[in-house]
Amino acid sequence: MSKASAPAFPAVEVRGLSKSYGRANVLTDVFLNVIPGEVYALTGPNGAGKTTLIRMLTGLAFPTRGEVRIMGVNVHTDGPRARALMGAVVEAPAKFYPQFTGTENLKIHASLTGAGVGPGRISEVLALLELTSMGGRRVAEYSLGQRQRLGVASAILAEPKVLILDEPTSGLDPLGIGLIHRIVTSLATSGCAVILSTHHLREIATYAHTVGIMTGGRLVDTVDLRSRTSAYRFRVDDPVGAAALLERQPYVRKATPRPPYAVAQLGAQANVPEALRLLANEDVAVYEVTPDHFDLYEYYRERVEYA
Ligand SMILES: Nc1ncnc2c1ncn2[C@@H]1O[C@H](COP(=O)(O)OP(=O)(O)OP(=O)(O)O)[C@@H](O)[C@H]1O
Image (cartoon, rainbow, N blue to C red; front, side, top):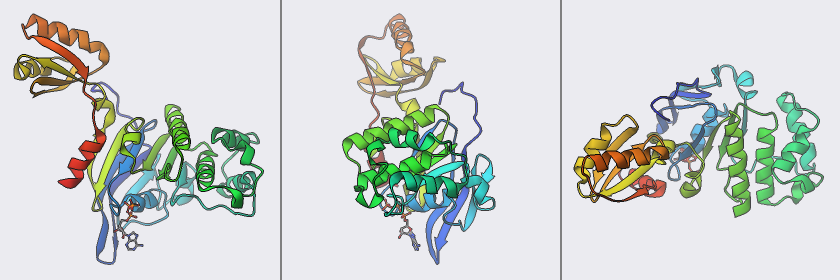
């Protein structure tokens, strides 16, 4: 997020969430916010607590301490109202009645949730998930990936304000993964807050806005990917001096020397010529300027290894 962006009302608010099973603490003091239109990815090694956290977010499990609010509604004290605002797939693939067709299952889901689902909506979500030709077939005949996609169809059926997905792309082929990316991105663009768990870091880096890294039941880091994408490295004769100069500019969020480069997080690509003019005016020789691609996988590896 930029320095100038206005604070938005959080769609998902997690405050001091902890969970113990007997003497084992599986979640410890987790705080996080997800705003409307944001895609928040939770990641971390096996057993880090992602599914436990997601189960708490959806009200499927109760915390030992702390609270979760969806659009301001407490999930654990006002469950039905909170659940009416969210769509979720937890423990994918979602459970369906195998003897009924995909369309029938979605009708059952719509009637159970009590949310208003218009007559054309079921065909619409089946088409979105590329399941139109499967809609009339019994779910027992669906492949794992098709059931996975039907799960996402049921989660978005009632046009939720918050979408919660536990490993939505596991078991999907590359085209299925691309499809889920497009759907998540388009929902977020229309204002839905999305929180999902994943192990696919390079894939998530292309469309998540924020990544929360969990280890040992704690949220150990939150990475704002939007600020990372506007970093540029300038190969210069004086990286320390250039970084100090850049750091003082209003359009530079942060600048650090990384010899032979000065690396600067700029507000936008449009600021590159301005930065070049500044360095030229101050007699800094610039040999090249390139985007400084953030490697989420490398960052994660270091963060988890040294957590
Ligand atoms: N019902 C339970 N009783 C006791 N311990 C549990 C229970 N459910 C989960 N745990 C423990 O909580 C920890 C976190 O599990 P969780 O499934 O949330 O991890 P995860 O990050 O989703 O892992 P993965 O990446 O393997 O899906 C694990 O050590 C697990 O053994």
